[in-house]
Image 1 (tube, rainbow, N blue to C red):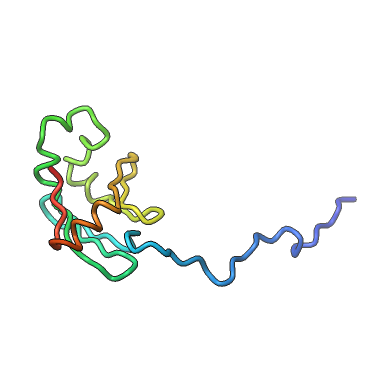
Image 2 (image 1 turned 90 degrees about the vertical axis):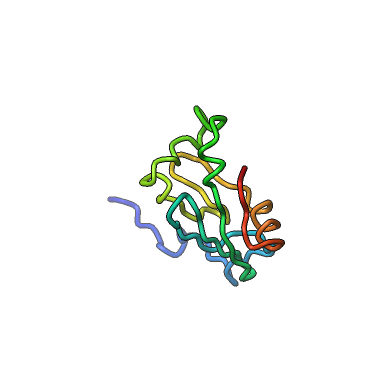
Length: 111
């Protein structure tokens, strides 16, 4: 005879209330724009643009985790993962630096 389990004893603990980010520089959404640019919004409502054109065209990116982002199909796969902008290959952007630049001028230009 198979032992029976009480489904209540194996439930994943539920967090009440839901976890809320307390730092404003966590990214809440990202939208990919043409020409290797992103439109990001942070948890506090701050929004702006990330311009990666110069950065991705720089030869110093050759051979790095960012090189595949030159392909528009790969670049378009940007997603928010744990409050950061990330791509499937592991490339990600520093949300705190992005937040500071966008708060100051509305755009973060990576060089």
